[in-house]
Length: 114
Figure (cartoon, rainbow, N blue to C red):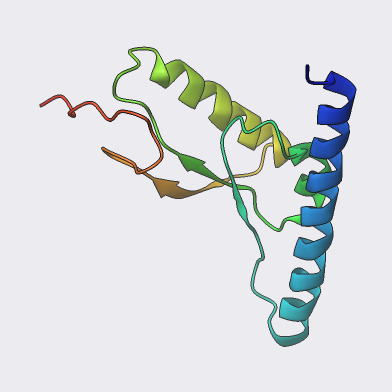
């Protein structure tokens, strides 16, 4: 049986470790460029604490992979976009990736409606 406390501790550790790496990479970029630095968030992905990451990003960015098989995918997309706007304090956010059809990580891809 999985221990929920261990699972959340692992998620927190992983998020913090990835954030630490991001901050090191951002510092290296800053030595050479004043361009905005960001990374892709992944929708409602629960394994990364977006709220601890957001203050360190120059612009919030996200990916969108709507599921054509889910007639309610627009609802999750809208909620996710609202989250991104909130993470950025109401500032504009950037859509970094979007799949318009099949992706390689779904168990089954339905044909896109015409």
